[in-house]
Length: 98
Image (cartoon, rainbow, N blue to C red):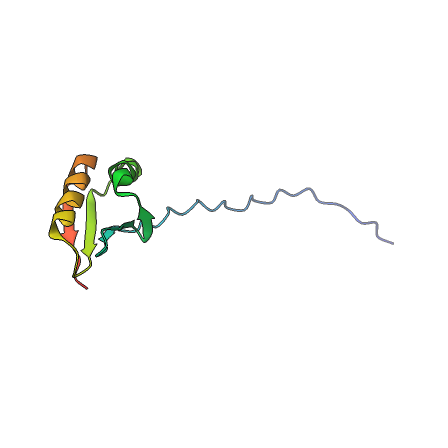
């Protein structure tokens, strides 16, 4: 009879998947006709918008925002958002059409 013989083997380690880089979405600021401001669909207090934009800029190299407004909103609010974005370090503002 044969007796079982064990062979010593070394198996390769499974390749570790590198974490995929998170897909960076565009920074979209929406100004609604009642003056409410949304940052990527999340309602943001206007007074906190500059700080939030600055935080986003710290983790992203993209310095552009997309600005969307309701057709009935006041243009002065658009100007305020552009000014806040520039103050936060975002240099490019693109206007979105509906």
